[in-house]
Image (cartoon, rainbow, N blue to C red; front, side, top):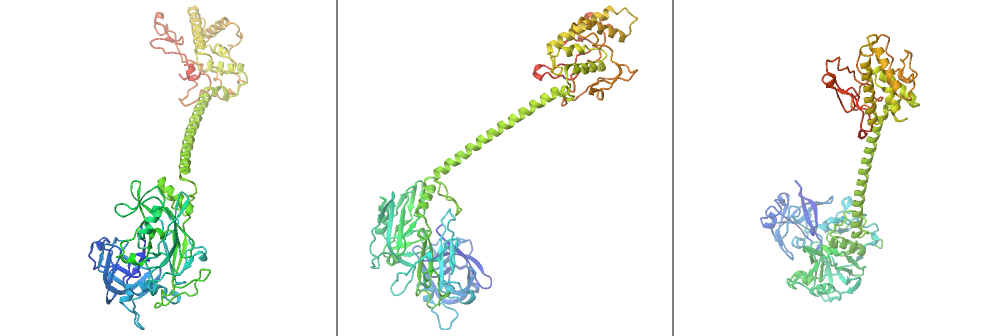
Amino acid sequence: DSVYTIPILVGSSSPQNLSLQVDTGSSDLWLASAACGSSSCQQTGGNLYDPASATASQQTFTITYEEGSVSGPIVWDEVEVGGYTITQQALAAASQVNDEPLESSFVGVLGLALPPNSIIAESVPSSAGGTRTGAAFAANLLGLSGSSAPSSPFLSLALERPGSSAVPSILGVGRHPEELVPNPAAVQYDTLTADGQSMLFWKTSVRAITVYVGGQAHPIPLPRSVGGGMYPTAVLDSGVPVILATLQIANSIYGALGIGPGSDGNYYIPCTTPLNMTISLDSRSEIPLHPLDLTYPVSSGSCTGMIQPMPSASNSEASITDLVLGVPFLRNTYTVMAYAPPDSSGSFADSHVSTSTAGSNPRLGLLSLTNATLAMEEFDQVRVHNQPLSPSPNADTSTPPASKHMSIGLDILIGLLGLLALCFALFGARWAFGRRRRRRQTYAGAHMYSMDDVAKSQEVAYRLARRASDNDVDAATLVNLSPPGTGFDPAEDTLRTHRFDAYKRRMAAEERASDDTEFGFGARAQKILGAEYEEDEGAPTDAYAPLPPAEPETPMSATFPLRPPGVDAREGGSMHGRTLSEGVGMPLLARARSQDVADLGMPRSARAYDEFGAMVGEGSRSSMAGVGTPRRGGRVSGD
């Protein structure tokens, strides 16, 4: 996460697409070449620079870093970055790379420090009128002229914070990104601190460092510079993953939190403890540093401080500056490396600089990108509540994480309650629909023809019984026993009792008339029915009179037409039939045809009666249509 790279095209005949680390602490461009066989070069997976199309300079390049070293021949080759092309760029085709964390996406370094610090420029001096020089990449880029030149003589840099896209990683060439710099005048510029007779680094003086603990400011006492100046100095270096400081400054910063160096000389801090500090450079406003940038988790609950002590004084960095403001600092600023002074509006009068004089009058511009209050909220979100940063630059991070957790819990609870309510609603709707369907099936016949009164319904029921059966069921008696308006649904016990009484009366009448041969079946039936009716008190005397062959006075005539003259009532089957899914059209009071046991040759002693009072025996079947039980809603079932 601390190595920031940029893709370039290198080579004239067959350009290679390689990635280089952006390094503001050095001034040279080098690439691990195919001739390199060290372990560092092997980590690239063969993605190495091929200098076949390059021009050799007969000079050698060697550089030593805080950790690692690089060496190899200096060559000229074509380099393109961001659409800008330099046809003869001096670079090092490194054949030896030691202790560098190379990989396939990082095979070299693009140095953007000031040109006077270039080792290649010193090794390959410029010649009068020569087309090949040892000029640094920045000098060649900003020295372009005409339509191919950048609009302004500066390079700018912004580094993205891991886990957040609020600030993108950008290398600007002569133009500010509008999303970060809507007003160029907001960038604060100042001169650089020289190293002897020239300016080699993007170096400035440190005027104040303040650590905030519990909301209280703790100013850090600053010593004089290692070079003897009144204020300590700082070099901005994007190639260093930490902030390096002299031991005195580092002890003072962590001492404000009551923390000292570990046994290995490094500083460790609890991951939930924020290092909240600001730094002021030259005459600029103080720049707050994000506490997430100042500690790095190494184990459960323990973090390494990203401000570490400078190496021994024998190292070149310790003799050059008091602080090296590496990646943790640069993530909090938009840095402008200008090769000419801007005006008060932040604009530049000249669009290009001379290659030979580049870096003679530079300015360092800084624009703070960190809101201290928001930074503390994000630290609490990540380190205390273990929640990632929002990847959106416009995301609302003002709500504390605890409230967000509560909101998520409430959302889940409301969702579960809503799901339960929906299930109950669906169950209730299904139950109501089923109940309505059963009720519709039970009363469909009784209501589909809009009978006005019970008497008219009884008349229709009586006619159905007479036309559908030859056994003359006591239909009128069953209907009259039903409570008015119930749709011909008498109680089961009532039906059973009266059917049995009717059967006994019929058997008695048949026995009395068995020797009377002057009556036919139809006449005997009329006599039997007449006798039955006379025994039923309170019934009209003409209720069972033969029906005239006229049209009935009800709308049922079209559905149930009268029998044509001469057609025997016993011919044909039942007039009613339905499937299990149909509703009952009318109460089924008709019976199947039955015969006397004497006619079947069955002794009367063998008679048996089913639960409805109907005869049961060999060669006969129950003649009563089933009457539904209360559990089935009083519906009449089929034969």
